[in-house]
Image 1 (cartoon, rainbow, N blue to C red):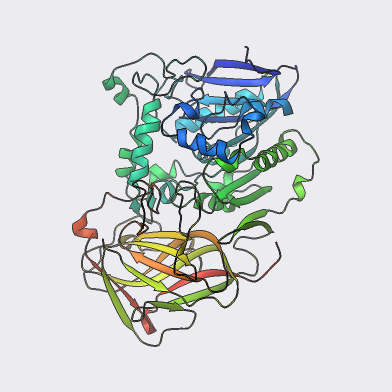
Image 2 (image 1 turned 45 degrees about the horizontal axis):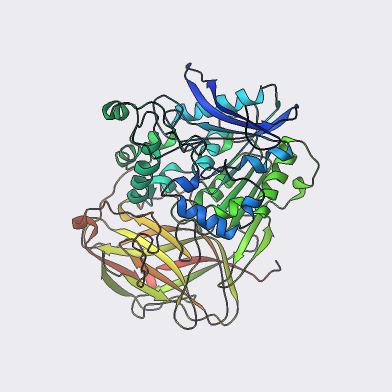
Length: 570
């Protein structure tokens, strides 16, 4: 029951029974002073006991976080900071209980490991209700955490468990097909394989080779070792499961929540630089949620540093103070949307009321294959340009802007394409170019140099759901594969994930069209070359390595649709 931290009680590996009798293990951090307090909870596959600095794949993130927040350890001993989770020492003094649970089959919790499954989310709902009924509880539970801990918040909130009072999904994902596994129908295998092997499987309960060590005792956190054969039988290999499900069917529908069932007040936090995982879902979840009280906030920067900043901590507490403690602190008067408006050398916050933003002027930049140019005027002559699908592709440049110009919101490209094979993959990269001809890049969630935006589509998945598509965001059902006839021209709509860029005078936009993942030509980083770890490398080169063609002009007008925002004050 001791914590070594003044004013905090630490209950370690407390057993909590699930509906089938299995007991999950949770850590409970609570104030020493008796009373009834709200709880901030997370459940997930990453150890509740291992410290960031002790894990090789998170060590650099820890160093970077301390460099960006040098006063962090002045306000906390840091002993209880876990990957993507709240620091209990910064919550207990303000009258909160923090609960961190090892999900079924991970670390100290036994059972069959099946990440994001209905069983795991049922466990989460059970934990929430259990916490709300404890003697130290005021009956209200809030959820807060990054990435995995955000994704599962959307899932469990749709179950409406007793005690759930508010959620803060921070840089997560919502749609398990379009964001977690298949970008535009293209399997995003690289990150999933790395993540599953080095973090999920490594943390499985019974893994005697795990590198997850208890930050306090130094012991392995995964319990007594079991055989490799039993480990294999006691888990779902999520990567194999996703690979075996190339279309958006029942498997994904069990995991992507019904947004209309989400009723809890929510603050959805996204990252403009979350290309490939941590961007689209923050907006999608916000829009889909049936909550009467909901807010959207989109920042920029790396994946973990913003979460622990004093400004963010104050924001999180103010939101929970209102919904978990009932404080009349003015939160209910907060504007529904807060966006960090990005410029090449600065950024500033601005409040909005709608998504897409009010007064958005949708501008079409028509592509001209003959000149490799794009402009707002229609192209009078038809032309075509071809490229090797696995080569450098085509880049279309706009003219330099005469005045400062902002584009904020969802984007898309309508393209007329043909292929020498029965399919082609389209990789789009929207770039901002400075007057000297250099790319402007932004620090992203998992990539130090992100472009302005990216989009993807497998042409055989080009079918649209007309009822769910809008002019600015196509919705592909991804239910079947429609091969191309080699040499025949096809019209496709490609979703480009929402972004925010303000182009100063003299800067210009460029759209690169390729058949492979984007890489900076001058990249010296062997791991992060421009698209982060969210790569698509499991593709048949005989099918996706042919010769691709983009047609433009007249009846085959290809264009980039951008959300231009009229000048407004911050």
